[in-house]
Amino acid sequence: MPAEPIRINLLGSQDLEHTPWGRIVSWATTYGRYIMITTEIVVLLAFISRFSLDRKNTDLTEEVTQKQAILEANVAFEQSIRNLQANIATAQKLMANQTKPLDIATMMETVLPADVYLTSFSLTANKLTLEATAGSTAGFAQLLSNLQSLKQFQNVSLTNVNRTASTGIVFQVSANVAAGQ
Image 1 (cartoon, rainbow, N blue to C red):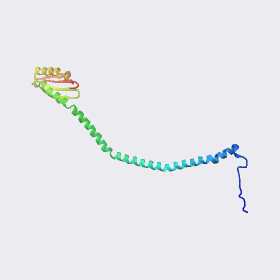
Image 2: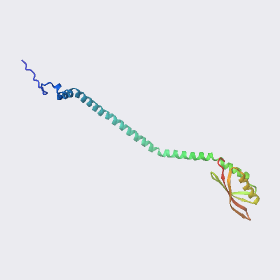
Image 3: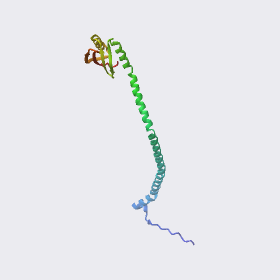
Image 4: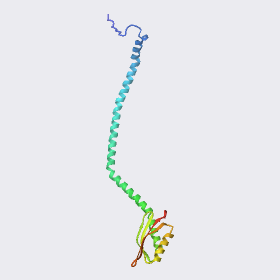
């Protein structure tokens, strides 16, 4: 007859489910198995996902390096565009104020008496300075009167008045140009 299989029970023959150690061993052999399997699956998924994340990191690093190279290659081009934009802005500003000096020069032509001529004419954004020579005191007085009567000029002041026998009255006039003119 065949021999009976030998059974070895290391846990003992007592009723294990009713003792604290028995409950712990029973719980560890049932639910502990599930916890260990779930933990191993999570670890394996994390390990596998690391390959994907490393690949994405490498791709992003290469993409950033390529874009940096493109930007560095275009620095000179961008600088020339910025210079061009600054030049365009300056030209637009000059073109916007272009009619003002022409209007003032035309106005000066109309108020200048016949025996007075200009030796210098300077116009900044808000100040007019001119040097003139008058052949007579009447022409000198007429020019000053005309400049003071114009609403485009404020604070008309006279400086450096000299009279010479050969040229006449040499003088310098400065005035503030009114805003919006």
